[in-house]
Each structure stands twice: as structure tokens, then as C-alpha cells.
Image 1 (tube, helix red, strand yellow):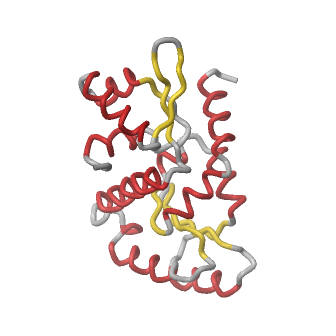
Image 2 (cartoon, rainbow, N blue to C red):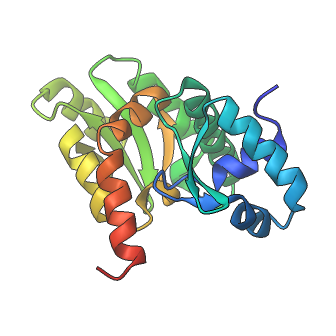
Length: 195
């Protein structure tokens, strides 16, 4: 079975999509025993959720967002975050607004919807006047952005992928992130090394 609580906790460490951790680091971050984490991480590697590169005697693991199982686990993480915020003084992510968003997103023109920095973002073709007028009617203070702007946010804003919450069309969101994963990893490396 994939997706139990520990596996979800491990995947959550990689929400930023560009992190790389050794099994020892994962064990420390989750405050769990090394043998237990080692077994689970190896299972996630076998399932293709995580990838590994050998560094000396250890493995450096990263998330594999091209794997459908990974997308499911990241989507579960987003759903759990929505549920944890719903009704907790976050009116933007209220159950009522989530239903409105998902109703609006039934149109194929909207690629994905996410929440970041107390704002809802819809990713679509900005030249579509129908979407723009529907958005303005339903969500005051929301932004309509295109794919290029989303990918730029993901690369330029520190912690963007870790802090954002995908609300709708999860597969599309992570599919778009696949287009820029190498840029995210380069940026992460540069930030880690003060470049």
C-alpha cells in the first residue's frame, strides 16, 4: 500500500519539489528511527515516488513528480492542507469558496487553481474574456495568471511550492511543474550555496 501516514510525512518534506535529503536527514527531520525511515524511503524509491543518487555511502533523495503516484501523494498533501485551513479564520479557503472554485474550474480553460500568500490564483489563457469576467464575479482579490507566470513564480519566489496549496486540477499543476523542475533544482542549489 502506498500513501500511509509515514509515507505522506516523507513526501511532505519534498513539497518544495526541489529538496534533496539523505535518509539520515529524513529520519532526523521526522524524528523517527533510521531503520524505519530507511525501509520506507527504499519502498518509495522502488515505487518511483522518490529518486536517489549515490553520494559516498549514502543516498540523496528527491521527489519524482513525473510519477503519477507522486502526484497523488502531493495532491493528498494539498487536500489535507485545505482541510486544516477550512474554518480556521481563513475565509478565502472556506468550504463555500472551495465549492465555487471547483464549480468554476469545471471549464477546460482553467488549467489549475492554487492558493498562495492569502490569494487565489487561477492559471488560464489570459486572453479568454469569459474566464476573466467569471473570475471577477466570483472572487474579489483573485488573480488570473498564465502558465509562464506560474512557472516564473515557482522559480523566483523562495518557498513558493512549499507554501502554495493546490485547490483544483492537481495533475495539471504538477504537470506544469515538471516543465521547470530543473530550473527549481538549480535555483535551490544556488540558494543553498550562496550563489
